[in-house]
Length: 498
Ligand code: C2O
Ligand code: CU
Ligand code: CU
Image (cartoon, rainbow, N blue to C red; front, top):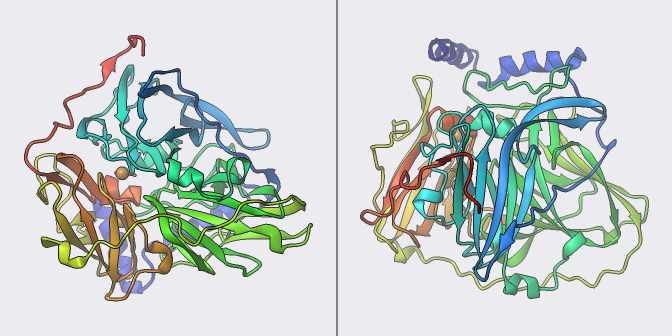
C-alpha cells in the first residue's frame, strides 16, 4: 500500500515540477505554525554535553563498558517529558572516550521491546562486531562488542537494525565515541573543557511532547526542532578564546550548511576519520548525516557580550521551518587566557595516488518504483556487490542523477579520500580521510580507498537512514572468507559477569 501511494505521490510532484518533499513539508509547517507542535524560543536553554561513560573495569589491554538500551522519559523542553529509547536511557547516549590501541569490550543489554543492532560507525571492527543489520539483539538479550580502536578519530555508535534503523536512531539510539592517540594529544589544540562534542539532530514533537516520526512515505525525515547534544537550539557561554568542536550530524536525513553569523571563518582540522594534514578555513560548509568534522572556532576576536550564532544556511532538498536556519548560539561572556594554538601540520596523512588503484567500480544511487536502490538492487544478505582482495586499492564511482534528492554514501570498515566530484576537486574541508561522502544533487563523486585491515563481509549504504532502511544498502566482501557476521550471536539475559 505504502509503495503505491508513494509512487503516485512522486508522479504528482514530477508533474508539478517541484521538490519531492514540498507538499508534505508544507503540511508539516502548517502543523508547527498552528502552535500544535512542541517547540521553544531558540537560545533559551542551556548547552550541555553528554556524560562520559566510565568502564566497569579495566585490565592491561582492555576497558569493559556496559550500556543498557531502555525506554526513558527525558526533558527536551523544560517541564515536558518525552518518551525515548536511549542508550542508558539518554539521548544522545553517553560518550565513550578511548585511547588508540587499547581494546574496548562494550556490553549492550536490550531492555527495549524491539530488536536492535549496534554499529560503531568508523571503526574497523571484525565482521561479527560491526552491527550487521541482521545480527540483531532481541529484547531480553545482550551482546558484547569488541572494538580495536586502531585509529584516532571521532566515531559514533548507533542502531543498525534491518529496516528499522531510522526509527530506532530517531527515538534516541545514538552516541559519540572518541579515540585519541599520543600524536593528537601532543598537539597544542584546545583540550579538556575546550574540546566539546556537538551532536546535531533534528526532531519533531507533538504538543504533548511525544516524538513524531514522519518519514514522508519512506522518502526523508525533516524535523522542525534542531537539537544539539539533545537540547533544542542551546545557548552556550564561552570565553574569548579558541574552542575545538567535534561536530557530528546524527540526523536521520537532514544536512546542514554551517556558517557563523558574524561572517568569520570556521577552521576545519579534522574529517570523519581523523585529523587532516593541515587546517583549512571556510566561510561555510555542508555536513550530511553521519559526517563528522572537527572545527576550531576562535572567539578571541569578539568583545565580551558578543553573540555568535552557528547558522544553517539553505541546502536543496532540506525542508525549512521557522528556526531550522539556526543551530546554537555562543555567548562570549568572559575573558580567559589561551595557550592553545593551531599547528600548520596536524597529521602526516598523504593522498592515495590514483595510480595505486587496481580497479574502478560504479555504483548508482536511485529511486526506482518507490524504493531507494544501488545499481537497481535493494539489500540481500546473500548478494555481494564487490569483492576486493585484502589490501587492494579501488576507486568507487558514486553516481547520482537526480535533483530531487541527495545521498550520504557510507562504506563500513575502510577510510577513503575523495578524488573529485563532477570532475572538480573536493571542497578543501573534505580533503582528509572520510567514511561518508556527500553525493549531492546530480553529483558523481569518485573516492579511493584501501580495503583493510579485515577480510569478510561489510555493509555500504546511504546514511539518510530512511533511504538505508528502504533499501539503499548492500555489502562488499573483502578477500575470501573472513569471519561470518552472524558468528557471535547475542545471548539471552541474565548476563554472565563482564
Ligand atoms: Cu553509521 Cu552502516 O552506519
Ligand atoms: Cu558505519
Ligand atoms: Cu540516500
